Amino acid sequence: MALQILSGLPVTINGINHCRKIPNRGFFYWLTIIFNRVDQERIQSLGPDRACAEWLLKNGASVKWKNVSTYLKDYNSLPPERNQYYIQAVDATNSGITHVGFPHFVGCRYIDEIKLVHCVYLYNTALPLLSAVKDTLTTLEIRDCKSITDQGVRSLKNLKNLKTLKLAGLPYLEDKASLRKELAEALPDCTIEFK
Image (cartoon, rainbow, N blue to C red; front, side):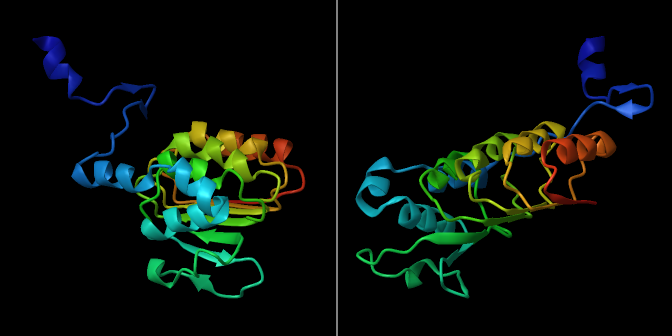
């Protein structure tokens, strides 16, 4: 009985609150999972870039094609399936993308920039999956993604071609100084902005 009462209280040791608020995974989270599922048959028939673009646009993100200056935001404006386009940049601001869909990045050989801003369903499990674009990704921004912790940020150390890394609005990071140092050592050619 006493343990039941205490289990609802935050655990504080040495002045540090070791309890995190677990995000509410309601109906919309599970619906988002459905929209993020990878369809291997679609990838096989259309190619990885088209399938990836469809996934991103369905979930509220936008894409910029290689050799095109503007972002495509409307799923209904996708070019005909017979046309071959390659994704160069992704802006997932306020999108519903989750780790379930990140395997869509496999086979996309031209993505050099990704913005993950205010992605409410983005958890640590998604960030290691960015290794699918580690050979081309040079710019990464992760901002206001409230469920990312030190573990997720540490997984970025394998993105060896990064030139710019922007991290901000990540409230559950416990040791920013240590993380900054680790990232700087692992990514010596990268400019890191950490707020």
